[in-house]
Image 1 (cartoon, rainbow, N blue to C red):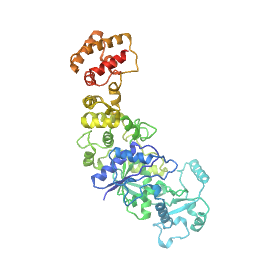
Image 2 (cartoon, one colour; image 1 turned 45 degrees about the vertical axis):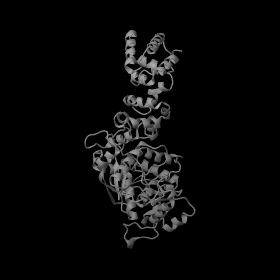
Image 3 (spheres, rainbow, N blue to C red; image 1 turned 60 degrees about the horizontal axis):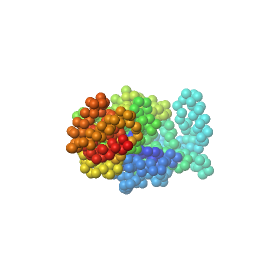
Image 4 (cartoon, rainbow, N blue to C red; image 1 turned 120 degrees about the vertical axis):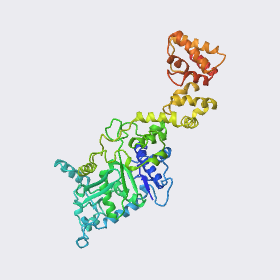
Length: 507
């Protein structure tokens, strides 16, 4: 059975990049009648932000990416927060510390030699590690741990653990080839001498990402791992862990990264609008964002730009995702290069897709104008701007067709309809403008029938008489120089309210 997961860290507001990955996790699980799991990686206690877990779970619900299992919907493979699984990580670290390296023949294994085990205790101080790194940099070597503590006897190491701070490191063998297949990238092969002895358990007893993610993915029976391509250089460490534990490893799908709008680096909190909260507050529609995120790395086989998540699920094939192999001239060589340099470089090229806010905004407008029915848009407006319910029901219903033609996001409702809630304010009429407003008021008062045609006739007369343009009449009647179709909106506002607004403006 297919089981996918998203494992966000609750260190801030939910990120569009998290939604992008979760989209593929969710759709792939749905397509193959599997389960989509949300697991919270909260072991970084320093960066933990109160309320961030609830925010990311709420965001996934807002997008309709409902998990089958999560902290809110636990089943039998929980807990779903890493901070509640510390005993599990300790148990698996102990397995590695006490397990011989599988590549050492039984007859050559040394019981008291830390270097012969899958993991080992390390007592190096921050000062020593800093000196080591600085010396390696001076010699133009790739900074990595030098296996100093692997040379300790197990008996000495165990004795020191009683009184000294320590970490537990992965014991990476030298001169071995590590191979794995990625459904998008293809076959990847690196040499173990380029893989660092990663810290698995920190001095505070919390696991690092690399240990926890492998243990959790195995125990939660994850079959397919979707994640950003920047994680490719870390994958060899995870492959080693699966090998040491004797577990069947999952299938990897490293998705193309989404770059900032300027193409310089991956989409981040420091560049552009990456927070989900921004889009909610600005009135973007969640299904429009989902459509855009699917479009950014995948082309609909029929060339369609507008489609819902169900159609995406039906048409999606992994090998159609943009950037599969072709994003990099030689992905395998790129992985080798980055791993050999310590895996610190961002796995990004200018060929990766950029986040285009203008395109997303265009798509959001298309959803408002073409995808959403009038009834759906009315509901969305009331949810986003509760004050809309203060308008008479018939008034709001009549406004919806006009709003569909002008709104780009739900936030536009407030600026487009503010004169329905209060008279225009915030500006002073010139003498000429006051004369025009008085003429308009008198003409409106004399109308026997209040409809868009009679209103438009009067406006045309004033435009001709004063040689002015329509933005001035918009300003006098609504407070803005553009907005909803003016005669139609004033017809809906009503004669009494229109005259009341003009009287307020003039007096």
